[in-house]
Image 1 (tube, rainbow, N blue to C red):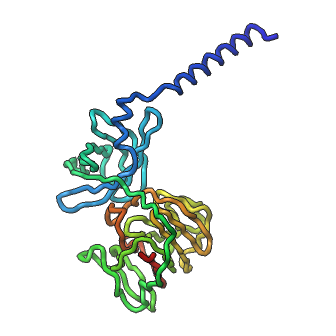
Image 2: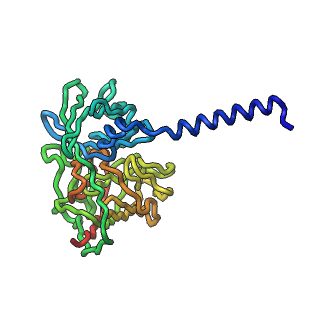
Image 3: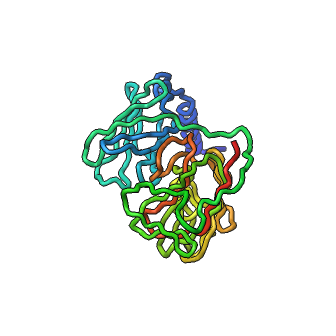
Length: 323
């Protein structure tokens, strides 16, 4: 037989469990659910300043009566949104600065008008900036691609087929003994051809503590870095910066030639680093920091990051998907 104390504890546990079931079965208020539903999902953002437009991205998710999200700014990687809510039909979220030169949080406010979001934020000086956003496309493909003939993007002789991201700034890209070498200070290097779905083969070498990247369609950075001896994570060699972490450590030492073989179909990416599959058929959620634009549904160039450190390439070959 149970003692009085055991009976009491059993009753307490039963009541607690009953309360848990009741709280879990509570329905979400219809008005709140209807107000937040239009803002859920992924959004491709364009922020306008007096001097330029730059891309951004965010995602809003619902967990019961709670909203969460993540954000990619002009630079840096995906980071969590600290607070997000919808009040009186307006989306509002805030997050901590990453590489922005400010002490206060970034705050974004926006309203849905038709299929587009229109909103405001502020820059480091507190000036109001205006932004727009459209729903990020799914990029699902109805069938497997048929690959076209290989295109040698680097001919080993000159920079034909390439252009500078900012022609007015310093150019550190040179061809030396058949190798494409970057000597900072420099800028990013973009292929003149644009691509949608493709296979890519790159042979590269990074110096000690080197840091660079290969941007797919000019929007999704596969990290290039001196990562020998590091644990896999999304910011090291072979990862999709801030989003996708390599499954294994296949890094070679700085100063050694390494290979990246990348397949991109819609949002689905596979990365083979030095012969080892480190990302297999994974979805890239959105653009990464430093992207050319946020128009994810359009073809884009291959671009080699040049504004961080030196890096060398001896082979850059693309097999584009046939239309």
